[in-house]
Amino acid sequence: MEQLWAPWRMHYIQSGDEATGCLFCEAASAADERHYVVHRGLQCLVMLNLYPYNSGHLMVAPYQHTGEIAALRPEVGADVFHTAQLAVRVLDEVMHPQGFNLGVNQGEPAGAGIADHIHLHVVPRWGGDTNFMPVLADTKVMPELLVTTAERLRPVFQRLSAE
Ligand SMILES: [Zn+2]
Image (cartoon, rainbow, N blue to C red):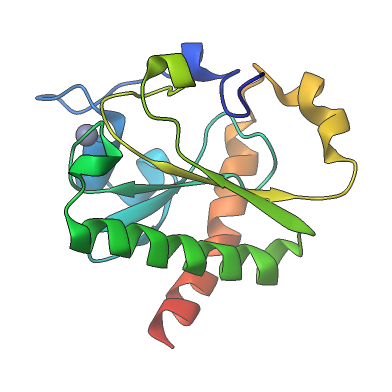
């Protein structure tokens, strides 16, 4: 079976954390703009995927650096899922998708682009959008588009997370 999030994994070699070489650990301490972080929760952050399956493709990444979902501390796992719910609500309001895919790829054989650090993909879906897969796969979205998307999502994350 073709992996839903696999096509861009070969590209994810962008600069990571100095010590761990990990993108998500770097994003945890860098400025929001550097990695298109749109929300920071208690135990995890939300950032845009640079190689999105769809516009609005988000990743929820715990601050805990682990490649195994079973190793996530309970409060971290709970906050990741809670934050995924928040991400769904934000995308619903901003982009009005007709459905969602949420998923974790654990390990490189499963298609994990960054196997050392678990992250949950949240992908908004619209009817017929699979037609765009061949176009988007392996295609890096223009940074301007990512900036615009991040700017649309941040205030809604801020408002809905405060409710
Ligand atoms: Zn990490």
